[in-house]
Image 1 (cartoon, rainbow, N blue to C red):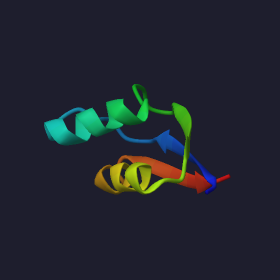
Image 2 (image 1 turned 45 degrees about the vertical axis):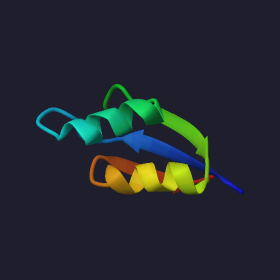
Image 3 (image 1 turned 45 degrees about the horizontal axis):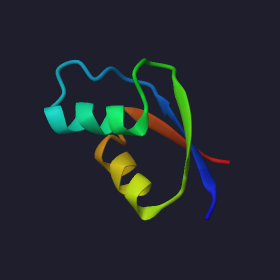
Length: 59
Protein backbone atom coordinates (compact mmCIF):
# COMPACT_ATOMS: atom_id res chain seq x y z
CA UNK A 1 0.00 0.00 0.00
CA UNK A 2 1.59 3.24 -1.15
CA UNK A 3 1.02 6.86 -0.34
CA UNK A 4 -0.68 9.50 -2.49
CA UNK A 5 -0.43 13.28 -2.33
CA UNK A 6 -3.67 15.14 -2.97
CA UNK A 7 -3.62 18.84 -3.88
CA UNK A 8 -6.76 20.96 -4.09
CA UNK A 9 -6.64 22.98 -7.32
CA UNK A 10 -10.23 24.24 -7.67
CA UNK A 11 -12.70 25.83 -5.29
CA UNK A 12 -15.59 24.04 -3.62
CA UNK A 13 -17.86 27.07 -4.02
CA UNK A 14 -21.05 26.23 -5.97
CA UNK A 15 -20.40 22.49 -5.63
CA UNK A 16 -22.86 19.91 -4.28
CA UNK A 17 -22.79 19.32 -0.52
CA UNK A 18 -21.38 15.80 -0.89
CA UNK A 19 -18.32 17.14 -2.74
CA UNK A 20 -17.73 19.80 -0.08
CA UNK A 21 -17.95 17.16 2.64
CA UNK A 22 -15.61 14.85 0.75
CA UNK A 23 -12.95 17.58 0.47
CA UNK A 24 -13.33 18.26 4.19
CA UNK A 25 -13.03 14.54 4.99
CA UNK A 26 -9.81 14.41 2.97
CA UNK A 27 -8.48 17.31 5.04
CA UNK A 28 -8.56 19.92 2.28
CA UNK A 29 -9.73 23.44 3.12
CA UNK A 30 -7.88 25.81 0.76
CA UNK A 31 -6.75 25.85 -2.84
CA UNK A 32 -3.12 24.77 -3.02
CA UNK A 33 -3.26 22.75 0.19
CA UNK A 34 -1.56 19.34 0.01
CA UNK A 35 -2.40 16.30 2.13
CA UNK A 36 -0.87 12.83 2.12
CA UNK A 37 -2.92 9.67 2.60
CA UNK A 38 -2.44 5.93 2.26
CA UNK A 39 -3.68 4.58 -1.04
CA UNK A 40 -6.64 2.62 0.36
CA UNK A 41 -9.90 1.84 -1.45
CA UNK A 42 -11.76 4.30 0.82
CA UNK A 43 -9.43 7.19 0.02
CA UNK A 44 -9.36 6.36 -3.70
CA UNK A 45 -13.17 6.37 -3.76
CA UNK A 46 -13.24 9.78 -2.10
CA UNK A 47 -10.72 11.09 -4.63
CA UNK A 48 -12.91 9.76 -7.46
CA UNK A 49 -15.84 11.89 -6.19
CA UNK A 50 -13.78 15.12 -6.34
CA UNK A 51 -11.30 14.25 -9.09
CA UNK A 52 -12.21 17.44 -11.00
CA UNK A 53 -11.20 19.58 -7.99
CA UNK A 54 -7.89 17.92 -7.06
CA UNK A 55 -4.59 16.67 -8.46
CA UNK A 56 -3.25 13.31 -7.27
CA UNK A 57 0.39 12.20 -7.27
CA UNK A 58 1.84 8.83 -6.30
CA UNK A 59 4.62 9.18 -3.75
